[in-house]
Image (cartoon, rainbow, N blue to C red; front, top):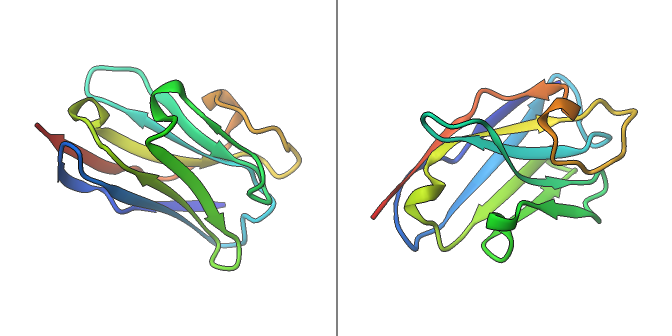
Amino acid sequence: VQLQASGGGLVQAGGSLRLSCAASGRTFNNNVVGWFRQAPGKEREFVAAISRGGGTTYYADFAKGRFTISRDNAKNTVYLQMNSLKPEDTAVYYCAARNGIFTGVTGSSAHYNYWGQGTLVTVSS
């Protein structure tokens, strides 16, 4: 599965962005999908994940109440709506998918087999 993340950009603190993760090559409707981020000089961290059907979601504590993960399987796309952005949200955001045989919605990057190239989100103060 090839993943393409998009939607990043420069936004002021308090603003919103919606990231998209599109799959090419084949459908990823049978894959758990997650978003991760990596800020300069920091390790990659989990943001949010969604089950294959979209009925189960899982968020990092910092994302709860501000970020929403969703998916449109008809469009083969997963979204990350980010509201009330803060300067500390500045990072490269990556989407990733688990191998289709796994159904668990997990925050561990080691559980994800396919990765997109990342999209940069910059939040100015």
